[in-house]
Length: 340
Figure 1 (cartoon, rainbow, N blue to C red):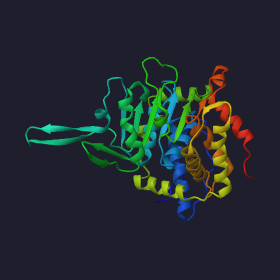
Figure 2: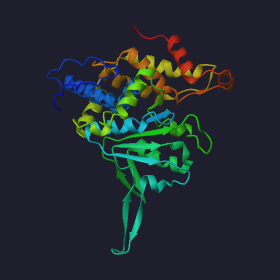
Figure 3: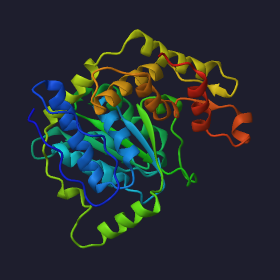
C-alpha cells in the first residue's frame, strides 16, 4: 500500500483529525490512506462529517449500513464518492412495490440459440450496492438481500455465486413517508451493522453546498474524485482493523451496554449478542480512524448509537411519552460505568 498525503480541503467546514505521522509500518500507511479516503469523501459531502465517519468505519468493519434521512441530503452522492476513492463498482436499485427478488439477485434465462439456460447476474454483483427506499418493496424482495448481506453470496437456481470483495450494502429509507411501505422486520434490521441518521446541515454548510453545486465547475461532483486506492487496499484496511487489540475490560464494557438494554424497564426488546460483537468491530474501526492500534471505551461510546438504535425497541409507555431511542441510549451511556 503506497503512502498518500491527504489532498487539500475545499473552502468549507469539514473537521478532520490531524493525519498520523507517516512511517514505514503497515499501520501508519493504512491509517494515512484511511484519512485520505475520509478527506476525499468529505470534500464533496459537505456538512455531514459524522455521517461520513460512520459510513466509513462500517465499511472498514466489513458491515452494512441502513441510512435514514429525508430526500435530497446526499445519500447517493455519499456512496458514489466512497466508490470513487478505490475505483469500486457502484450499483443502485430503486425499491418499489412491484420489484421482484430476481430483479435484485439475478435469474436464469433460456437462450434459444444455444438451447440452454444462461445466468443473468443482478445488480447485487458489485462493490457498493445502494438499496434506495428499501422499505417500499414487499418482504419477499427485502429478504432477497438477506443471504447477500450475511454470506456475501447469491444462490440462483441452486447455484451459489460469491460476490467479489469488498462488498457493502447501503439501504436507505425515508423516516417521514410511511404510506405504502413495508417496515423491515427485526431479523433483517439486525443484519445491518449500523443505522446512520442523516440530518440537515447548518446554514453555513448549506450555503457552501448550494454554491458548490451551482458553480458550473463541478466542485462537489463525486466523479471528480480520482481513485487513489484499490479494492485490495480496502481489504487490507479491513484486516488491519479486525486485528487491533481490544482488552477484556473494553469487551466487558460493550457487553454491559448491550445487557443494559435488555434489563431496562423502558425497553420492549433489547439488543442481542450480535449487538455486542458489532460494538467491538465498529470500535476497532473507530480506533484505526483515530490513528490508534487499540480500542478505548470512547470508541465503544462513539459506536453505541449507530450500532444499537435499530436493535432495540422502546416500550409503548416510553414511545407515547415522546422519548426517542437515541435519548434512551444516551442515558444508558451515562449510567453504565466505563473502564478507566
